[in-house]
Amino acid sequence: MLKKIRQALLQKRDNPHPDFEDSALYKDEEESLDVTFARELTDIGGKFVYCDGEISVIENLIGLVEELGMTKIYAWEPSVNVLLKHYGFPYLATDRNFEQAEIGITACEALIARNGSVMISNANEGGRRLSIYPPVHIVLAKASQLVMDIRHAIAQLKDRYPTYLPSMVTTITGPSRTADIEKKLVLGAHGPKELYVFLIEDRF
Image (cartoon, rainbow, N blue to C red; front, side, top):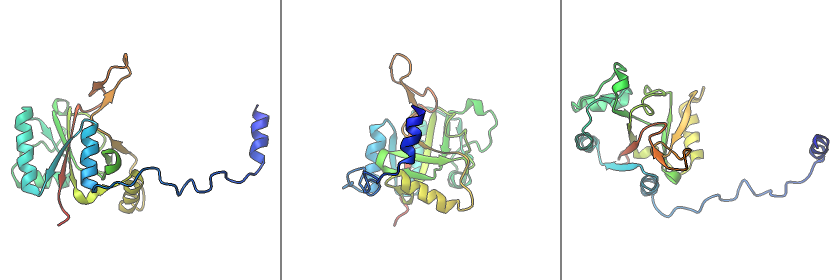
């Protein structure tokens, strides 16, 4: 069998699908990026919160924290901390007693509208832990970070890190879930049970 495979590889043939790379994989979206992202995110169990500015972010955060009844909130990224500190929102900026964390607040690299995914990397101060360990993950993202597909997100990532890419780049598509055991869907098996994306309008 290996001999036949080797012989087949030696025989040069024309590509039977020369236009494959140029063919559209998805239908064109008729709705805007933010509407598409919100729809896809909520379809997979995530929560979408639109914020028309920083004050709206804080107001929605306060309402959510009160609703959840949680107080152990961790945020390590400078851009997030500056916002929270400016408005006096309580948070923990170190990893002390991190095993007790209830909420992790992070930024992101991009929002992928096509499937409602959030792209993150370890280039941010949140590293590999803050978006995974706490049972509730809140992402603060700007509307200008919205892209349609993952290829656009990767292109942005390469522009942002021209010398080298982060060692960990991943996409989060809804709350953590698994159906490995008896094919029963379980949320939070390998990460947060709840995912909130606060989209901050910055395109005025």
